[in-house]
Length: 303
Ligand SMILES: CC/C=C\C/C=C\CCC/C=C/CC(=O)SCCNC(=O)CCNC(=O)[C@H](O)C(C)(C)COP(=O)(O)OP(=O)(O)OC[C@H]1O[C@@H](n2cnc3c(N)ncnc32)[C@H](O)[C@@H]1OP(=O)(O)O
Image 1 (cartoon, rainbow, N blue to C red):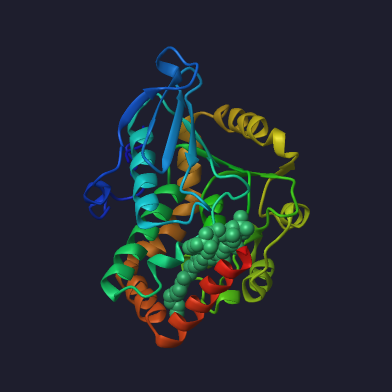
Image 2: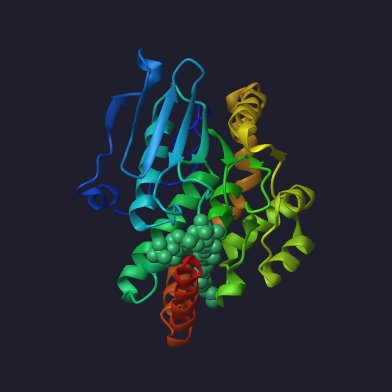
């Protein structure tokens, strides 16, 4: 992704995204309900709906992988492709990322992708997770998360990869990295993202305790930038976007790169080792058992 200055952000190292999209509708363009001109046309895929507004240069990207927007391999892949499509289109300067699923922004990793799967699948899945994080974290576009639902673990990482976060004021919409409560460990780049956002001491505490913060606490600790009534999340996200877009792109992009590159480079340098660590960790019998038990608990909670 080349910047105006010629500086490159994330490398184009993506796996084989298109191969994963058999049977999906990515790339289809259709008029938005009630829409007319180019600015009102939406596109996307089965799991990612993109509503572009060419006039403002802002696209709203909605996660729609019901029931909880778990980050399946397909969703990860479709997100990367939609992001790339917008980045390559000079019309767009910003994306508002939100959820199309009621009450949940994103439930994090799709645990069914790493439970009872073989090591090759877990590796492919983890590489897709790394890829999305790298693309989002270093995106040249302004990314604003309009968090309109629960936002645990991988969902929190998606939000933290954005430049700004607006959270709906609902005590059920908690945000944080709760990995330890599942018996798993956030890898270093999730930890780094946390530390970069809320600082070392707060991260140390929150990561070990697996804290999920309700809105007021999330604001206080610095995990989100604004907490607003639920019906004002989108409008506030748009106002935030306007504030970020008021800055000249090249200056903002280079500054973002300066702030984030070292963190991304750390993963880039040890991507394969990180994948191997992940696979050997999650494929352990003991970890498989605790993931299985956690999934079971989630399923039973429902009834
Ligand atoms: C040495 C170290 C080396 C390497 C590192 C090792 C490991 C690193 C791994 C680290 C990364 C982890 C990041 C993660 O994201 S882990 C996932 C954590 N996610 C959660 O804990 C969220 C779990 N879900 C919930 O809390 C709730 O579902 C939620 C609040 C999101 C929504 O609640 P609601 O009441 O609306 O829905 P539910 O009834 O609970 O769920 C509906 C159905 O969805 C299923 N579900 C929920 N979450 C997940 C998920 N994450 N993956 C898969 N499926 C999920 C749930 O079971 C229900 O299913 P059905 O009953 O309908 O079948």
